[in-house]
Image (cartoon, rainbow, N blue to C red; front, side, top):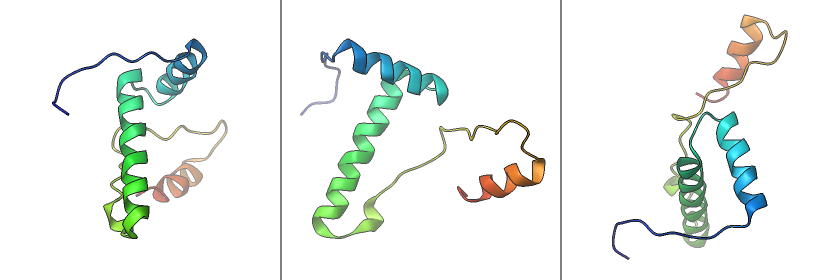
Length: 83
């Protein structure tokens, strides 16, 4: 497949779910869907040959949301789980 762009059709309800999820993660829908497809392909590839080191998920584009009333210490402890 050559590099470039293609157009796909998705059901409106799926696009709306993607819009809401992207907004929560402060991403655009294209980035969200591209990341989801890439992660899934990497996951399937890793499972198919048993090499889990191939999974290259990154939290670089995501921001952890703070829970209401959460102390600084609790937030930092929860955040450390993703480092």
